[in-house]
Image (cartoon, rainbow, N blue to C red; front, top):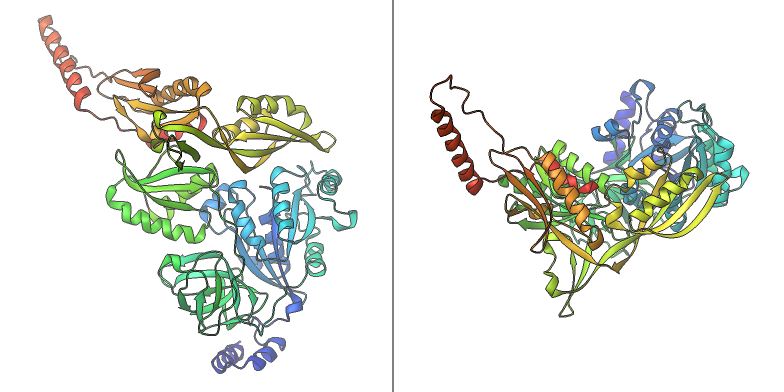
Length: 626
């Protein structure tokens, strides 16, 4: 071991590439990255949520000897506490494995629709993908979506039926659905168990045999695609890259093609799965670069890294633009923490490229950020990470979608918050976002699900049978009706068996109104919402009813009202909290009791004039299921 370390140190200082190759091939320098390009395989795992991707990745790490058995734990690649607590993958995670003389670069991806942007970035760094389908559930909605993304990226797909060891497993039925949905042949489908390890070796062998080696020229100018990044308080921005052409060495001077920022490669290396330093990262390989950059916008996901001062290399295509589905405003509880929140949002965006935000000021709350999310789960995760990783206490407004507004003067604008909606007299029309919704469900639940979709203003488009007894329902539906409580009701209507996936299609004109919520005579802008005119009264009544339960009682009566313009459409009254001011009396003249009660009444009247009602955070979330 000592000889290995001395040899490795000497060779790194000498920079002798050929000696490095000899040392690697001789077995003296296991971690050195030299590998023939034709022996490199880059692939990811894609699947619907909870189909066993992370467990299957654990078996890959064991079989390849990447992680010692004493260091193994379940879902090893899920590194965040929140991932392990919830049992879901939130962040993509790369790892390098050495297996049968090949370098296998794996990227584990999330399965939930809210983190589909993580999947699309992973696909751009790979040549192949393992498509995992649960033998007990078959093809699900996100399975279809992920396959479409993989095929758009021209990846080689390896279909795997997982969890074949479970008592309820029906692997042949699942395989039949895969063949019908995606056109695979019998000999292409593999069967495995991520839990027991059965069939795992066949999957890795299929990766070697079927996934093509990466293309690219090591002698050409450097082109490295940034597919993810993190911020380290000691070493600055660390970018995760796929080297398409050329090679990056420790100490190289680098330039970001789009940001035009320059940095030195303080350290380069691979994921094993921890960051493992190396001398270089070559063509076709996946690795990381420690840049030392402190300006968080200097190295963005999707940018191309080239060598500084060695001529201009063409930028790589990068990634499609993110289109948030849900918007909410984030504010610190204490106004003094706004700079901390601003810094935290910038750092969080490095590891969550789908997060979009810009400064916003709401007079009743203060300074914060209007933030775009890919869904409600994404919003919940961001809030939790800001709280855990940066120690911030936050207030989030009720979630909303974006609207296109055309004013009377012909000017068009986007509205992301109900408080931004112009006065009805100044608007010509308003358009809301619609999505194409795919629902996969057992046939016996079709009636209940179709009834639910119609109640949410859904328009039926098509029905397709995936297999006997399982159907795909296709609807077009307003996004605002989908992000409220649709998912929960879908699961209830199907006893948990249905799954869904959606994508934005267009904006359509609608009869929409803004409903203001008035608490104790003051308009609560963060609680206002936009809804269809036909649903305004029922939703307004529902919201004030929920607020009556959620807002703590005050020393005075509080009126809760829902209004459209100057018209009150719903009202609830919170009775005052009563304190027994006569408890200390033990008898005597009744006028003493009346005097105390009169004094209490006068005090409550005064409080009603000057008091303000504090609205708890959970009340802001009441609009999710209105």
